[in-house]
Image (cartoon, rainbow, N blue to C red; front, side, top):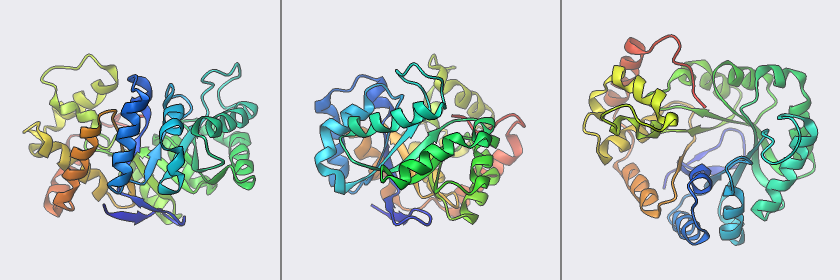
Length: 298
């Protein structure tokens, strides 16, 4: 699998990474996760991303692949209380959350800790950033990052405090391509893309019941990309390859609890880079049809 230098860090990351939300929220068993992650690692994936608020995702990752810690780069997030009786973004909460994540993941350090979707107002106070900087100084994380979108992400990038940016980029979510990614590239930040296949929302013939998919579905009805009309695996490959073709993107995380989904996604990338003509047509259609309020979505 293709690997890319992750900004100015010393990491060479696989272009396809694993997102740990689904294994927590969808009740994956340790046996499922063990098979999924070991198969992925054996096939060349080396990025695993999770968060403090993804149910038992961190525990599942720690239980199943902590013994292979040298085989992957491990990212997690902090910011939401998720069981602690403290306000979100409280400095003490962040310290406790980071230590809990390390215990859950059964490791002494992670490669990146991202602040999880905090606002510009919170960032401006500086305390949250300082907690991450101290964690880096103590060796609990090698790099620090920000996970979020829209103008909050732009402010985070412009602080110059972060090594890494996690943000939404896909066929239905392209604000970051002009708003934040050029700024991140200018500062040598690593960029990890979340929701790179837009939840495959175009597969639905009617508005989906899942609220997490509805905004993208509505956008895609208007965008009506010719490249996605087939609603098949090939269209998923087009969407995934689009996200990875965006300048400044280093890796894209896809979440699943199904080992076959991982293999399918990896195979879709075997077709090689997205043709420039297809990339250009998707960008041009976005510029024609996107509404002013189509900001980056968490």
